[in-house]
Length: 302
Image (cartoon, rainbow, N blue to C red; front, side, top):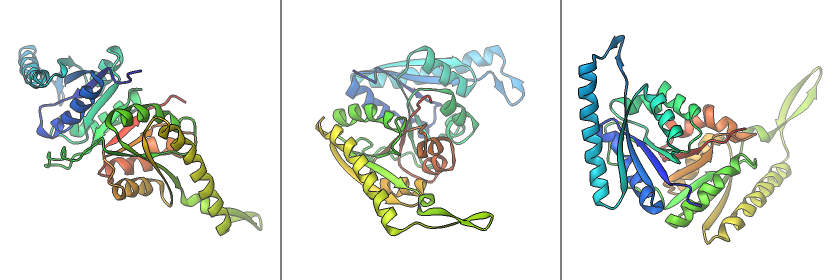
């Protein structure tokens, strides 16, 4: 099964937004997928409605820019197409992805105009919450578009919490790793809250550290769980390592990705335990904003 038949990349005309383009191009080439270059133009600036004549000019210029990029990609053998939608930024992306059966959205996390808001502001939050499509977020430092040198598809860190929802990243992982010959780092973070246990203290409870043997057992159980996933992937010829770390979930993911020189972190946006919080809570926010590694988010419906 080819999970990437149609890939969408929103572009706003900035160089920083275009940083995501090489990654989308590589995906499209590996999976022989259609690559849609999408421009989204709103009808209002501030509290003023854009005049129809001016809006038409903007559409023409935007489409010309997108078509130039698409033409360059077609010369490389990529099936690239230019599209423009008149809509709110987030709604335009979400609606296009849904109505056109897009399999993957690829977007840079910075852009001097629209894309900065898409990922770091309310629009990005609406896209992440409003779409069920996998999203590949390419992190870019402000003013530094030259990040595409890192090989995104060489090694990937995959946080798992033991839930079925978290494991729904695995089919995506199988196909990506097989196509790109990626090394996979399976990670489980045993969070600090599991180091404590409640003890009755009068009419209340106090938390005391658990015994060292309990922590060791949890580490062994986590390692055994990851080994079952490892065997499944190794049966497909994929190179896999497993890691169990103790501490804060967000920091554990970020540090592991950096220490292993991973080009990508891949995870689902729901999970009954840790992953659910990681996706839309403080941990996911930390992974996205404090980390520097590109992030693949696959949303699961609880």
